[in-house]
Image (cartoon, rainbow, N blue to C red; front, side, top):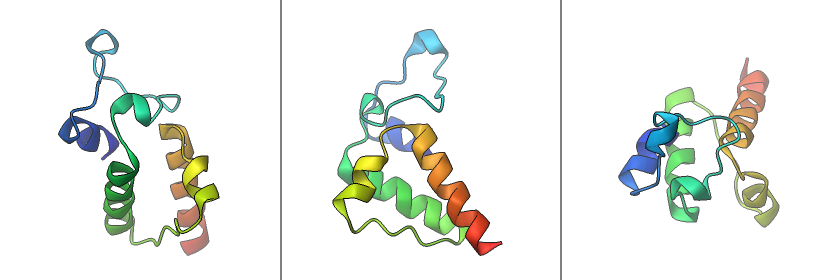
Length: 81
């Protein structure tokens, strides 16, 4: 989902990495801004049936890279299960 969003946002998925996105890949390096991040979060909510609360500035600032997003979603899925 993140890779698709980055591509639609015109993000830079480096050909040298084979277009690979890792946990350490920064969201801004993919061209995902705050609006793009909101779209990714919406996609994740729909795909996994979860609610991601992103109403505080601290919550937004915690999501710096792909790994941060993965951990946040895993935490929410663990609460649902």
